[in-house]
Length: 131
Image (cartoon, rainbow, N blue to C red; front, side, top):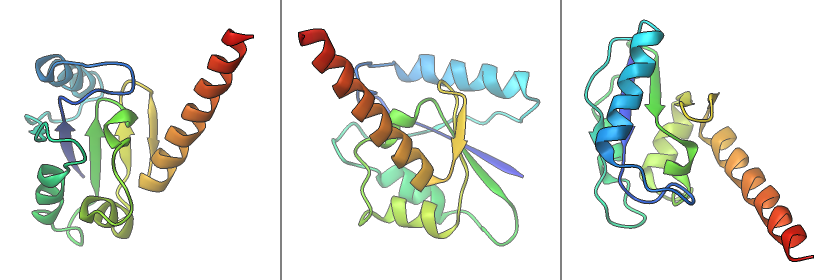
């Protein structure tokens, strides 16, 4: 099994987590789960840019080994949409995504569904705070 690590420095929902902290967190996760750690691929800080992730996925041989993508948080994907090549590659190859902070693993559709659900619950919480 091949584990790919991926980070970016754009905001994660309400948080901005420095890349060095994300890398340390992923390394700690790998060590505690007996996974060989590799330095994460870092995304450009341009909004809606997933170029580095697309390149990372293009470089993989999906038929030869099972791949798991390790990310710090599901919020990394909050700007990802279906027409983007990274989304299509994750979806077509059915790559599991392990979102370490949330302790949640799913395919890209499951991650996007969880993001939508979280946004919905956040909006309900914000509405009740106003009342």
